[in-house]
Amino acid sequence: MGGLFVAATTVTGRFAPSPTGALHVGNLRTALASWCAAVCGGGRWLVRMEDLDPVTSSREHERRQLDDLARLGLRSDGEVVRQSERFDLYRGAIERLRADDMVYPCYCTRREIREAAAAPHGDGLPDGAYPGTCRDLGPGQRRAHEREGRRAALRLRTHGERYTFADLVLGEVTGAVDDVVLQRNDGVPAYNLAVVVDDHLQGVDQVVRGDDLAPSTPRQLHLHHLLGFAPPAYAHVPLVVGPDGIRLAKRHGAVTLDDLAAHGTTDLQVLRLLAGSLGVSTPGEITPDEIAARFDVASIPRQPWRFDPSVDLPR
Ligand code: GLU
Image (cartoon, rainbow, N blue to C red; front, top):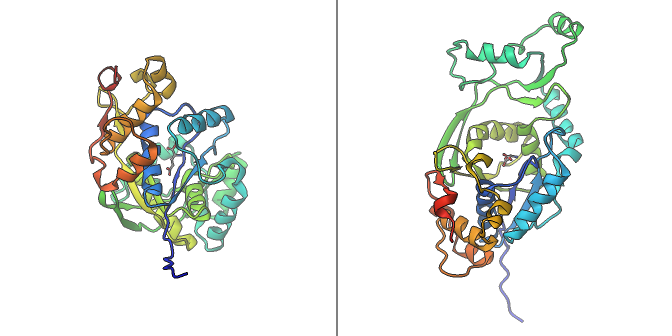
């Protein structure tokens, strides 16, 4: 039997919510975009629970978020991993950076950081960037902070590196890197580090997420580089705003699947609305697979999508 075997180059995408509340239309739209971008070419899509913060995250929110994704036909193609169960992996990465002298303890309080960051520093750092107060403390100064009972966060030592990346939605984006926190002063690994370690270990090579995270991408590219990982491709999707032009939130009214169902909007109607907002036309009934087949990342509008529950919902 003759046959031509072509090695599949499949994409692995992911959606990585923090299980701190119900997913709203904005989160669901990002989830749908990341799912379509992965599966439209026969790729895989993973869901990862970013539950680093034990105070704000809960299993109840996790269960509900997974249920809501399933209501739209979006299911993880692999085990749903929880960041709360992977601290050893993140600490291992910090140890590798520490061995290269890339890590230092930072004793600053939030207030001290705010005040120092607000002072003019004129060295090209992004607004609000950590100005490096603790970067060059000597052993005596560190001991003095520790005697005062201050607990140290761990920060990455950077040197004003800048990264440019070709975002699949935003085009070319350039940003500076600052001394990001790698581990909070309560011992919890920090977001930027955990995301980089997980995207690498899970084989994620395409990240589709909200454009509020675009400013963090240079930091993540830098961490990928320092850890010797190949970075994923990025597509940052403009956020969803309410009728007032402000980022969509609970106070805008019916914004979760349950809220919308209580107003008589079916899950399928929500799916079609979201698909339309991503540039996929949806005449009549449409399945998630048909949406993925018609999806093109290049058709995602570059403007925020304004969602007004009182106007946009089919009735
Ligand atoms: N956990 C982040 C959030 O819910 C998303 C992180 C990411 O996609 O890189 O906003």
